[in-house]
Amino acid sequence: MSSKDFIYKRKSSVLFSPKKLSSQLIKEIIDASMWAPSSRNAQPWRIIGIQHGTKNFNKIISALSEGNQVWAKNAGLILVFATKIIIDDFNPKMFLDIGFSGQNAMLKATEFDLETHPIGGWDEELVKQAISIPDHSKVAFLLVVGHKANSSETPKERTRNKMENNFSLEKWGEDF
Ligand SMILES: Cc1cc2nc3c(=O)[nH]c(=O)nc-3n(C[C@H](O)[C@H](O)[C@H](O)COP(=O)(O)O)c2cc1C
Picture 1 (cartoon, helix red, strand yellow):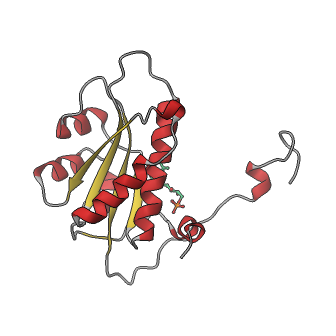
Picture 2 (cartoon, rainbow, N blue to C red):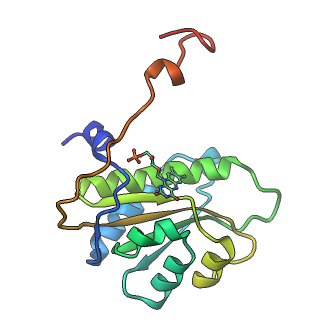
């Protein structure tokens, strides 16, 4: 399968099996994250992996919004993407860079036939407390990763805007 196919195969799944990921899988997913582009090659991400069945896993699940807890609790691994320590003012490009890093992780996991789901709904303080993230770091997003559950549930329909809603050639509003 080409990388183009992984782009279309990736989806935000809610059907996870609690099976742990092997160290090799974790290593390859994180390595893909590390190879994301970043402004001035600052690599401003700090990624913390929490495996299913650990005390910290349960703490992280409790820190999620209720709707997310329902399905995330079944996953093998949660990756918390945070900024490195920010000494000076926060630069929004850091979150952009971390987003690229997260996309690499999702595509690599998809290549391994794993399921993924990014999460934006969490309690910042609870996540930080759970895994000892220092004050001068911000959580960018959480990524749920795991093996597929055996399920006959029909996945929800996924849609995208028409291309002209989000893309113009030459200038804003010019139809493609
Ligand atoms: C930064 C970010 C935060 C998200 N937060 C949540 C979330 O808290 N809960 C959830 O169920 N999905 C969340 N999603 C998943 C989106 O709903 C999903 O990507 C979108 O509906 C498109 O579906 P797809 O990922 O299957 O293409 C988030 C996605 C991103 C990129």
